[in-house]
Amino acid sequence: MIDFKALFKISYGLYIVSSGDKNHGNGFIANTVFQVTSKPPKFAVCCNKNNYTAEIIKNTRAFSVSILQQEATPEIYGTFGYKSGRDVNKMEGLNLKYGETGVPIVLNDTISYFECKVVETVDLGTHLMFIGELIQSEVIDDTKEPLTYDYFRKVKKGAAPKNAPTYIDKSNLEEQTESKNRYQHQCTICKYIYNDAVEPIPFSELPDNWVCPTCGAAKSEFIKI
Ligand SMILES: Cc1cc2nc3c(=O)[nH]c(=O)nc-3n(C[C@H](O)[C@H](O)[C@H](O)COP(=O)(O)O)c2cc1C
Image 1 (tube, protein in one colour):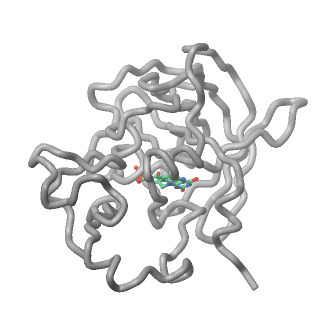
Image 2 (cartoon, rainbow, N blue to C red; image 1 turned 60 degrees about the vertical axis):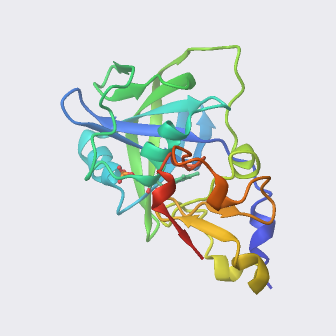
């Protein structure tokens, strides 16, 4: 049997993977960044074929990885993890620098970053795995902890959207009881669930300017489920 909850025990970090150039940059949140060799240092990242960034990395043949700090703002992972660069300019107004290959590097909520040129692309069906060789890297803020997927789930109450390799259909998890469902409201943008049964304040009593803790969407974007 497969117990999908067992997979939640895998440790990951959360990163912004960016590509493109000064005029046309984009990025997405990825948990699937990992070092695969040391001599030379190479890194893998799995990118859904539907992600706009996949097209950009294929053309640019390079990417940057910004390692997010633990208390990264919902605006950062809301924009990069739940919206597509096809619909919004994610880089607008951000603190950016540009790498040796010209790719943008997001510095907001970033504790360190690295830049890679793509040396291999592996087709995994739904995702492309880009293998990149390290070109440069830098520590930005040594005082903060990196954001882990576990912290994102447990403390930030974040969920993976469909394009993430770790997405799990809720029907595969233990069913929640009907009575609990009566008190739940779901964000239509990122699917975050506000559960009245476990929160100190019922959803209806939250102020109008309350925003989704995961993606920053307005209270009005929630529906009762
Ligand atoms: C916690 C989290 C982890 C994610 N991990 C990945 C990942 O490893 N690979 C991937 O392709 N998408 C991942 N996603 C989904 C993309 O970030 C998301 O689909 C994004 O909107 C794509 O943006 P783009 O179309 O501008 O490239 C993740 C999202 C979240 C919130």
